[in-house]
Length: 295
Image (tube, rainbow, N blue to C red; front, side, top):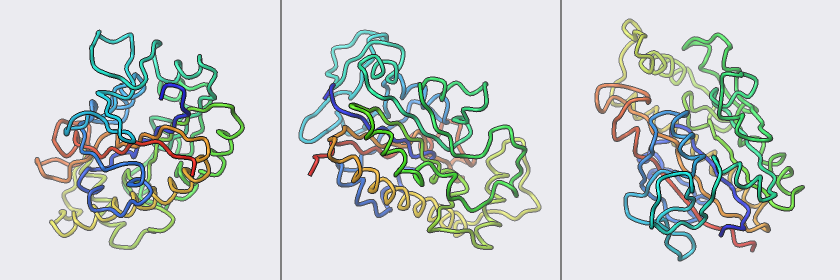
């Protein structure tokens, strides 16, 4: 396992219950959907833990990969000592440093603003020797109205062909992709905005902001919340289709693949909306893992 190529994908903000309802044949072909707990409640801490080898922890027990069971997939030697069985023990400050030292081509791609590599305040993309950012600029002024847009090229998984080509040019590769399609506003090329979606998303953006005020914009009924969750489900299904394209292009290299959400999202269950706070809908995330068989 330690010598395999790697594809690591985060489905930003994706809720576990949304994943349960989604049609995801390409992800399900990796292995069963697993209910896991994220170590972070928003993008920055969740990925900081992830890049140190701390994946969301399955609630059902060890990780299962092609019939083998591991207490953890990666384990940093810099962390506290443990007797748990790890598929890939490593030393170094990050996964990326570990694989780069082993001669892998280490490639990152992202679409939410924490991964905007043009912003010197963003620490995550700086951890990669090569990073490709496709989203809006993090310091671009934005309002709930201007953020509600259709998205195509701004989505990382719209670029599976070029990302796969970068991997295939290398003898060995470690590819990380942050997928923003499941992050608000949930729009994808096969799920464009409607008038109803636009209005509800503007309200949701205001509810996400603890300093904001959604009064005067109408509330979100249970029916409206189901509508928005269905948007995230369709965004996940689009991501599954694009991941299927990525997997087919890299299948012959037989990589280890891990796909998980970095965190989930609350839709009023505990009285709040969004993430960045402790709630089961924020900390509970979907996870799939497996090895592409080269067939």
